[in-house]
Length: 290
Image (tube, rainbow, N blue to C red; front, side):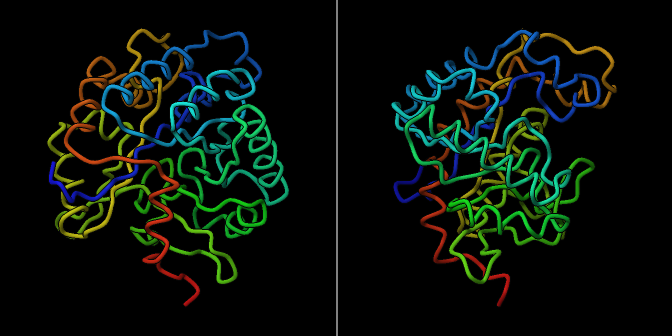
């Protein structure tokens, strides 16, 4: 790693194996409390991994999880990591109207702040679900005191994506300092490629992610934004019946190697919290209203 390497944003989307978008059609929210809870033990493994590597990260956490694991929230912030909001129960942003989105933000923010004793300033919409259908989302985030969002995937995808959004930091509102930090994409043959983590990182060879982040750091000279989930390092999690073959392949492929790939990634690049990255990127953020 070069001595003057860019500091990239490392983030964990804290949700359990039964709360993912891939299974929302076969697992009812009303059943969640009766399912095997594995999020705390997986987060403890992640905290240990980060401690060994001496890196700090942002944990975008569901309010539903924080309500049931208050001591975990305190351990996250006591270890020097940022705690941020991932909404209440992983409902996608474009399925709300503005009042319902506002209530979801307020409810999750309060539980996270009560559990951690820290002000919550960052937000990530479940499944990167802020897009052209939710023009009011940023207004609510600003009005509720958030400093930044990392809720946009500037790609085309069957579950999410805002293809025309900027690839890097932008200011969505003319009257607010709120900034959006999209998840990382790379360029190849005139196309944008998803390269910010999650299933893409788990399924594709490690060399692709290393190439993509190097491209962003050296060619674009911008920090990358990387994310993963606690369930992605858990090959022993229960198997869900009834989900589509595509969903099962996406969810379960390479769970057993994810930990080693993460350790390699953390060692190959410089990493830090998303709130600090947002502060550094604010001066270069594109003003969408300009």
